[in-house]
Image (tube, rainbow, N blue to C red; front, side, top):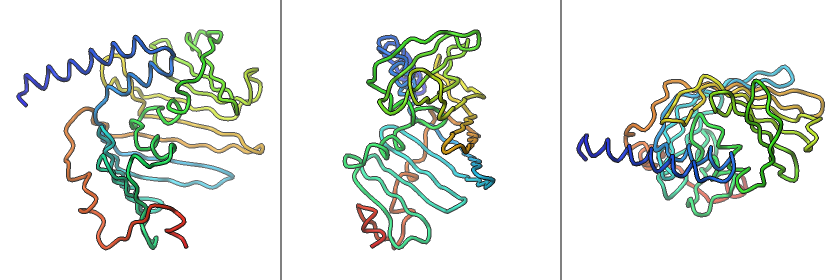
Length: 253
């Protein structure tokens, strides 16, 4: 494809993405529609988790491309590699007797969400809220747009800042918003395409049994909508002499 045709194709993605965003019925739908205009992302991820005085750091390199292509190289604390070529998903944790593999069409919902969420976005939460009824909540000076969603098990609140960016997601036990279960804050924004923001900083807190757990994720060297070497999605180049099975029960008999 010539540079001119590539520019035209990318412009069409922006236009079609904007039309989809404008026609989406809820804030969740609009945000997901915006993220879905992003075709590829590569980045380094550093996650620092703290719970009950214990601290863990996880480092990984991520390559994401639509549709359903993913390569995650987790370096610490446990070396794990995940590869999906668009058709088949593979995962292997170093030291395990076997690896896990399934066709994408047969993956459980949680694994599909992990596969399809765009890095440095809140899609892991938003995809679970898609299709749910939306409630308008009172605005504040910090968050001029606030929307609520009753999941049946908890009540989620999405808040946009004055620049129309998703800045906070909160989870409460009920719609009275009295008992907070979890909070996710997003910052260090990067405009991936016009009007669509990635957050290079994620900070979350969760309260269970009176104890708080914290996690901070930093997404560095974000490269958006640029070509990714297709060999990264070829499992045969990275998994040698490993037997793969289609269930976790088969991995640990």
